[in-house]
Length: 155
Image 1: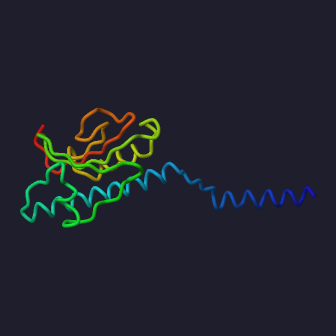
Image 2: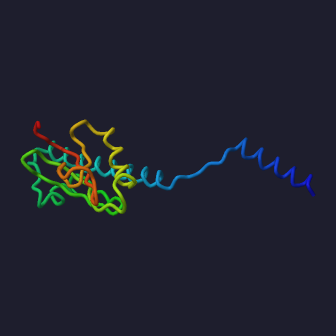
Image 3: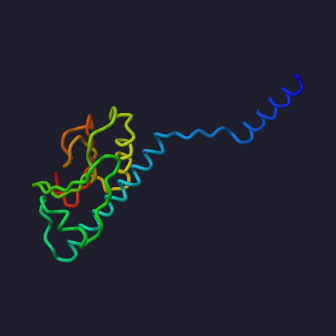
């Protein structure tokens, strides 16, 4: 009996050494999915905004932005992980924002991590992750808002 156990132990050890043990980190998968969906959504919104600009139309008003852009210049992106899309026009410029409540602490939240990781894909100074849309409110806490500026005056 001991020989059989030894053979099984050696076989198991050989499989572990040869194949390794792969763990799937669910948080990393969620972060990757959210980042991909958010990046795609921002790209769709930016494309619609730029297409409208190229047609010679004025900057959409904040209260009618969806009707001004969709369906004429694209398709409204789906909500991402319980967050919602918004658009704003203020003295500093115009922006699109993906915002909503956080499910946990901001530091370990996969949504915050996903939105923060998108900063490397966007021009510096035109994308920021804060507590409220328009780049205000400081670090995410309780809520998160990723703002992508379409036009921005110098700070």
